[in-house]
Length: 270
Image (tube, rainbow, N blue to C red; front, side, top):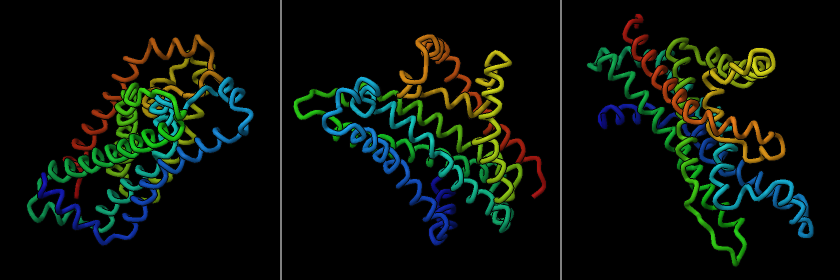
């Protein structure tokens, strides 16, 4: 596998778009989290801290900061998804997938190393969430406050599964459609518009069966840290009761994406 990853590295090490998109991934997560932290921390002024905490709580303090940064970071998962779409569709555009197989790679080896890239990218985003939460949590802590800095870090695991779900979904579209522009259009149309509309409609008219849709499933792994402002206690209790099933569905979707990718690539013409 390390030999295969070395081949992948040779493909991207001089590819400018790769470095630009990777830089956006590295910057976007800590930047977004700190921007929202700074906005909420300073919105009420020094004399309005009590009002702020009464309305918002302390979403950027330990241990809630792990949940807050995970939820906020999920809003920019389209950036690593865009990166994997670019890298994958380039294989088909420039026929490098065909050349790799002619040179001796099996189809399963080729698609497997691409999925390892997906896994590494999801891991990278999770590490960025860890760094952001750890940093902001300490900035937000009161000088004399004793913090439980590693409590609630299970949220990192939930974010990892959500990131993996988003990036694998974009990878699946890339393998099946192969054209970068079309894949990006469909991904953004579905993830940011189509599924959101479907979830709202199904929530109102179909007993919330929209919770079974693939990206909505992973979206529900991390509860909105500002839910006290927008959710009823009954809705939060329902989320808690359904969490194990939601987590299991998310894992099942990731495995399904992987199975379809391998099956489809083994069957299709090069």
